[in-house]
Every structure is written in structure tokens, then in C-alpha cells.
Image 1 (cartoon, rainbow, N blue to C red):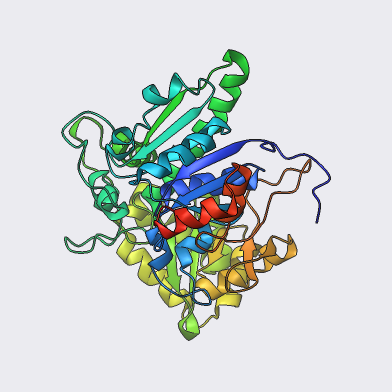
Image 2: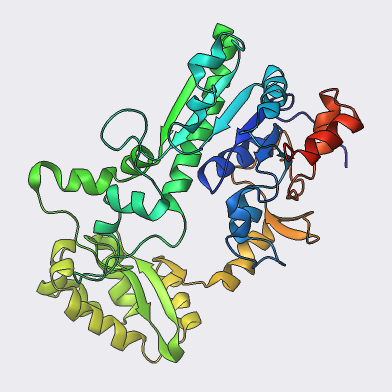
Length: 399
């Protein structure tokens, strides 16, 4: 279907030397806004995230999530013949994104300094684990390792010494991808004012540490950090998951004394608890959380999830169901807001969530997930290479 209204990044071309999650998540969002994203992949194998699993009709779950609406070009950047192809692509590009191994892009002559003289309007976004300089510059960085270095693990999980837990999604990669995405948008705006490109240096460590601001300041100047509290809140109570009858679980959160009184009256059906000295202020409820938890668990034991949620809604207490993944796929709110679309893929049609942040002025781009090298021939033809030249490059393993 032809797009009738312009998208914010229509006409912007992004070349991405990307793998795994951080850079692909960044560039997929640029594609959502209309940018043309050319994903450069290794011939034969491609982005190694293609092989993480086969859960989506034979495709990898991470790859499907982060790579729709892109063009896949296979190109062996270690071969000399690839250099001219990449040079031709960059001559027409607005943005280069890379999250190769530390120092790899610079060794290939793809640092911002090396490129700026030839392509003064080119924006270069480098994504790495730890960034240039410092003792960790060349240290390998994967999501779990950054969660550890950035302090996330120390405040996540249960209270026991061996109960720390990682996030269930690639939170450090996502953080870096988001800052790369917004950094590129701001660099495009800056280029409108200056006429020249700029470099964006994004690290996974700095991105995640920014998100750790609350626990860091809570532990300011040597103070004890927030205690690990599982799915409960470390300092507010009751705030977390509670079992109901029939094996269900409800998540609830109280923020103030007015809500506490309503919770006692309308949910636990015991107004006297509101003035119980053990629970008369948040810090007391937090200190006595084991006793209060038992009261709540006993009160919910004869009720179903639906019945507990009904009481919480009546009392205007914030609450949520603890959904599994199927519950999210089937979520009534996402369905009611018509947030799902279908996109093409090498395995056929797949459901795909519209990007968050609906803008009424345009429709996000929701094109297919590319097969490895799916667009190589078309891109090389755009660059003026004949069918015979393309065949020779393919035979030599360049593409």
C-alpha cells in the first residue's frame, strides 16, 4: 500500500554494520519512521542473531523483533573489493551505524575522523560496551555482563545472597539502542542547523548506569543500597505480587496513606488495620512486611484473581495481572487499540507490534523482516554494477 502522508525520516538513508541487539534495535526504529536502512551482513552467515533460536516459524526471536523494514546486503568487508561498494553506499547515505568489535570500524577506515573529510554531512553512530579510552576499552561486552558492571544485578532479584536476577529482556542492549536512536535524531536536527554531520558515541555501560539513577542516589555517599525484594518494591509496601485462590497472582501497589485506608476497608474488609500501629506509615509497613504479607495472603486465599481485581478497582488501588507471554499476545488493551499488524518474513506473515508513541500525522513503516542477502542484487544494481560484475563478486565471496 502506498504511503500517502510523509514520514519524518523519508529520504534518509542509514547504512548499518550491525549485529546482536543494540544497533539493530536502534536502526529498526529509524526504519519505523521512514528511513531506508541497509543492513550489511556477512555472506553465508549474516548477523549472528539470526542463529540465536528458531522460535518464530524457524526464524530467531531476537532477529524478527529488531530487523523488520530493512534491506539485507551481504558484503565481506574484509575483502578489498567490498571497499568500493561500501564507499559508494556511504556517498549516498545520511547515517552510518556500527556496533562491531572494539576498534574494528576504525581499522577498516570507518572512524568518524576518517570519513568526515570525504562525507562531511555523514552522521556516524558508534555503539560499544564501554567506549573509547579507559581500562575497559577493549573488554568484551554482552548484555548480562553490562547488567553486572552497571549495578543492575545488585538490586534485582530476591533478598538472599544467591538470589540476584538478570532482567528477562536485553535491558542494557535496549538502553544503548534507545540512546543511539535518539542521538541520531538529534544529530539529524543539528545537521539542519550546521550543514555538517557529527559523531555519536554510545556505550552500553553509560546507558544502563543512567537508568540506575534512583538506586545510585539512594545509596549516595556510602549509604546502604535498596535491598533486593524480588518483584516487590524495595522501600514501599504493600507493592508487589500476592497470591490469590486457585493459584493466581495479582500485582498491586499502594502509594500513600489514603490508599492504605481504602485498601484495608474495601479490599481486606478490615478497617482496624488502617490504624494498627505496625502499619500506620509506609516505613512501618515496610519494616513489618512479613506480618502484613501474611494478612494479605490470608485475605486473598478464598478469592479468585478476578475477585481480588474487582475489589482493588472498587477501592481505586493500582493493580495488574501477572501475565505470561501468551497473556501479553492476547492483551485486551492492545487489541482494543488495534496495535498489531502483520509483516512479511522469509517464513511468511508474522504479527508485529506498532511502534509506541502513535503520531496521528503519519503511519509507521511496517515492512518485512529480510532474508539474508535478500536485497543484495537490487542494491548493487542501484550502484551501477552489471549482472556479470555481481556474479563475479558472488563467486569470489565478496557478496
